[in-house]
Length: 98
Image 1 (cartoon, rainbow, N blue to C red):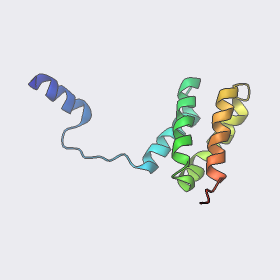
Image 2 (spheres, rainbow, N blue to C red):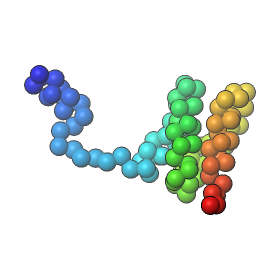
Image 3 (cartoon, rainbow, N blue to C red):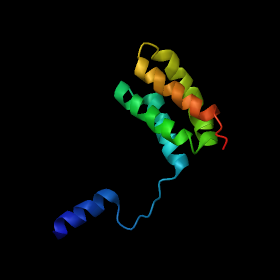
């Protein structure tokens, strides 16, 4: 059992208490939107940004708007991806009033 514990610690990093910040997550997802060659990876990144755009509008807008617009132009024949991109942009520009 100790063998597995040490292997897991080596993979995860023992003693490192690195928190995943929203900024870092958004930056990584934006990089995946821009640089991924597989459409599935891009789609997953857009869906991640879509969820984060509700709470972190400014950060997602600053980091991801240009790559999202570029992807919109590149992948215009994929209706599900286009829908996700437009919903993400909608989340960025919509304010909720109660």
